[in-house]
Image 1 (cartoon, rainbow, N blue to C red):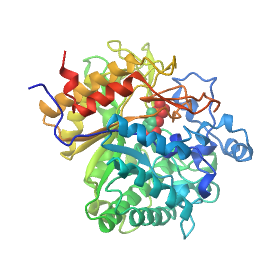
Image 2 (cartoon, rainbow, N blue to C red; image 1 turned 60 degrees about the vertical axis):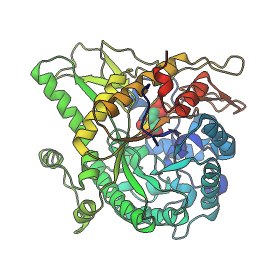
Image 3 (cartoon, rainbow, N blue to C red; image 1 turned 90 degrees about the vertical axis):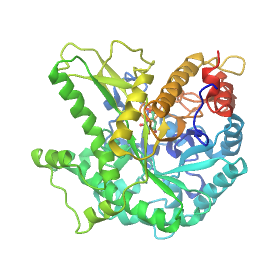
Image 4 (cartoon, helix red, strand yellow; image 1 turned 180 degrees about the horizontal axis):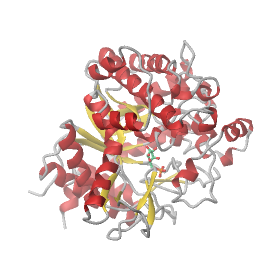
Length: 489
Ligand code: BGP
């Protein structure tokens, strides 16, 4: 009997409203931070920090600009008008689950309204009804880099405490409206990414906090998201008793560059610097080592009396995460080659290959990550982002993306090893960018992840026609055989 994944394994794919939908002003939607993030195609694609840097002046210029070619997330993959066609293609691949996000600004355009935008609610009703036609289960991210820009302009982003009740009003609205259509939810996408791109995740720009310790501002904003995430979990369980709510972390995996003890210690410290956020959402309290960091770095969070009680009372049901690549860590980076990863720059591992964007390809690292997370949390896991951003070429209406098939094949085998050999409880898998969408970091359309090619360039030019790639048919075979095809000669 050839190997296969467990019965009921949730195979699928993932997008996010800010990178997929476009229609940035349609259906009553408000403007989001992502709509004001322009691309910088002249900057080295491995320079993550530069691609995510932004100032208030640049936001104001974006709000004035009608040149959408500079702001790729305004059109994304034009999913707002193509979603029915796309969902039919997902169904053709056999998707069991589809991870997507609801754009907060479609429901509350400025975030602070008391009444929701009915047109926005209707749009997602239609999306969920389309998914239901094909028995595809939605897995919905409540916040995926889509804070309304109003929260930055007229509040202090997530640093403002009053954003918590705005968010819980949004959560109450969508859980009530979609109580019969959605049972799998994620609260914040990569809550830890607030540290590495505070604008995208928390609507924070340093120049708006003169005289303040910006690191403290970021952790205060993250505290508000932790409270909001716990309240969202509470609300979701109350309105949809059978719901499962997950946290979502950027699974960065670091190897010691050498067996020198100081390199091993550095790698351990780097791993803790991401685990501390999922620890907080899974165990419902700040881990001692994060509290030590706060104390040692002079970070003083202001909390209300029942914040910690709320966080403790409403931990998540499962742990979801993104995994793309692994990196190396060493006590000193002196003389070592640096490369990029998801939201980071790090020491390059000389033993493994890299993508065209410098992200290192390491399927064994996915198994290492699954074992680490399952041993740490003993909660069901869900891989909600994984994939290869590559320069695809459309020839005769398809893309011969054997490189992407090789990436997925190796990662799927590592996943099954983790399940069968390491005892990991893995609920499902949604590949990132199951259809070509705008990159979060470089805002490029040409950093393609999809099983489906979208005819559009980095400036928004193109027909936006969809073309299944070679990997589209390969993934269809994987899903219908529940992975058995991976082990046939
Ligand atoms: C993660 C985000 C996704 C996606 C992914 C790939 O951090 O959750 O939104 O963008 O990174 O990164 P990129 O799009 O920069 O290639």
